[in-house]
Image (cartoon, rainbow, N blue to C red; front, side, top):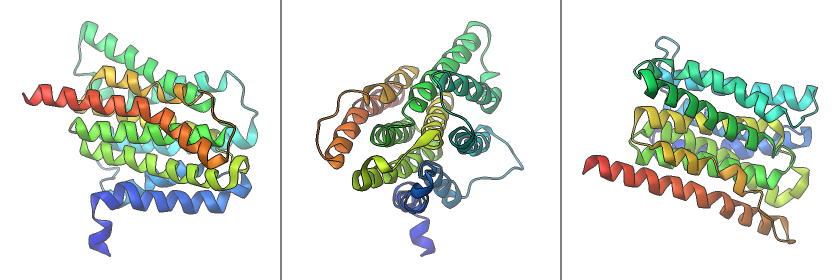
Length: 272
């Protein structure tokens, strides 16, 4: 069993999917099924076993900020009525947190580069979180967006030579995929809430930004990834929930695959 749990494929796919499915199944009657995203991510973090508070590098700071995302999401779902301003406000808050996460990496930049990287990453996070949070009441689109963001950032990070961040992203995607599966079965009764959409937007953004700063994930691949929560808004067919979920997942897959291709081309160019 220990050997199985030590397999990277299990750590970043099967285990987080099962964790997300269990959490979503148990908590969706309480309208907290969106915790599936966090369950998938933290299952991977636990199994990878690379987390400690003794030396807070950017990857460990990322995990700490990821703890805050579902907490903020639960508070928003249970204590407040989401408004149009919720997404941009939460995006700005977590963009500031992202500055703390990547502070040491950004310090290596100077002058114009520092300004461009700082402004670009902030805009990317605010955009992605805002458009993700706006899906809080649409289970199928939110689940598909989380799946696309997680796998887009995760696989893209692996292709960009950031293996640990890649596992984190894929764990997030697996948890969101489990939520989407539950939505296929139970339909609109499964509510993602800000709990899922905020977690997916924040964690995927941080994974992608970290892969760009520490690996070979190009900045323009972030632009492709940012289209995921936008394209899932395309019309869905008037059909069964499982068909709508598949179509929404295909919408999300298009920009995610685009990010993979761009990351692969960048890595090939760097190695050549």
